[in-house]
Length: 438
Image (tube, rainbow, N blue to C red):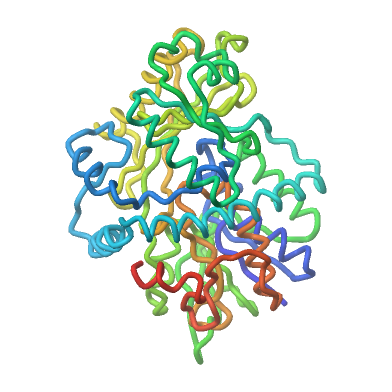
């Protein structure tokens, strides 16, 4: 079978890898000059099965209202005259209940576990190196109230088999001594030793090279203009070569849309209404002046909702989400405030450890669903498949999502309890309640 995969991020390249392993003829199309140059480029670097939690919870609406006036808030909603944004927002509110939260957590954790096992097997098979650190993820809290809420969350995750341990301040410092200068502001933490970190861009580009060596064709610098349908099936994809400006038309037996936030607008004209909206995330990557004093364990700072991960002689600080459409500029007043807040917080935690004079800022659009559960499976058009909507968990869920979709396309049901899209483009029974609200 000839398959065209649209998108060369962690999701698209993982999908291409597993499809090629199954013996298919695969072409990957992306508008950038290489793989992983958009959402997968500079994320928080965490593979965090322990934190596969949806944003929507019973207390989320109040938090969002409190954050509306803060440009540096963890989740910033910028209302626009955009029906897709309001559709997403209303669907998000419908998910803000304890029952919906637990239902969504169950599926996210199931996909996270499946994906982590897929990643470990893939790394063992290929030998890809990507500044991997298998030291777990440590979540620390800067108030007693937040710590108590975090301990309750850890208990919930343990009910799904996630080994998230609750720690005292002293235990937090034993796991990551580099937090010593901030210890007076630490009230406790949680820790999952099975989680890890690493550079998603480095991994994805290395996997793309291995795909090419097996015969996968990559068409970089090609804009994806539209998918055309005839007789209830996708017949072709229309592209434009960025280097020559010439139109390109490709045909295939099957098509996979793995374009992150851009998946929804591409499929909407075909009558496939995915409720995916971009959440603009930020990161700063700093060179370490004193590597011996920097953290080695990947961290989550609860008060600022940011991730801090060691990548060799650099540190990555990432977080915050801004629901403001498809704006990827870094030169806006809000973007500057949010980027500078990341560096300022790192200096508070680890004064003088990194070179803050030349921060490498980045922003990317996280393709978010109201449930945080991605769309994986077949749409209403029988030869059009989708693998998108992973939000902040694209790196965590990447390998497993690619493997699962390849299995579905080969006529097999993946071995996990997850609501994949069925052949009619609707959710399977395990997902239906969540998707109706979405």
